[in-house]
Length: 192
Image: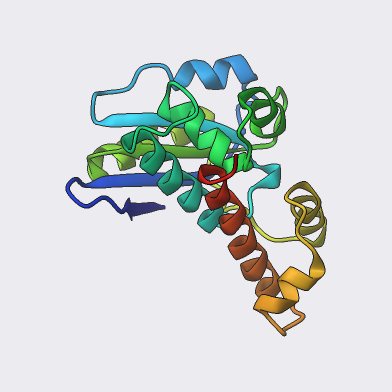
């Protein structure tokens, strides 16, 4: 999935995917794949996908990380690390890496790319699919266990979910949860 990120004067794009670790790559092997980027790829961040609340979660994290980076209020020294900070809704790098960073033997990994050329983002998505394994479709699928873990991690109550939807089916609740997480992600910039 490729989306445009908002910026008043420049064009930026985010590529997001959940990739099945079909080749059973280690954490070091996956991270090594992210080291060589052309100039128009600004950030490549692999994440543990277990606490990702859908693509909205990562689009929000990417937009907020880009805003912090370009607005010169970034917490870290790299856009890649800024993405993991916002994805985890943390201000401490070590905590963010512990909670959302890669670990060995993950079945799936989340990928966030930020760049200035949509075509280059697609090329990198395809390259990582070839090197790691196929894309999971739909990405970051909802399940009761996943929702419970995400709600616990981000301290989201059932009351918050029901404030956004009166429906009780899992998909409606998943969408509401994604919105709650996106809200938490946005608070990193103003949290002190």
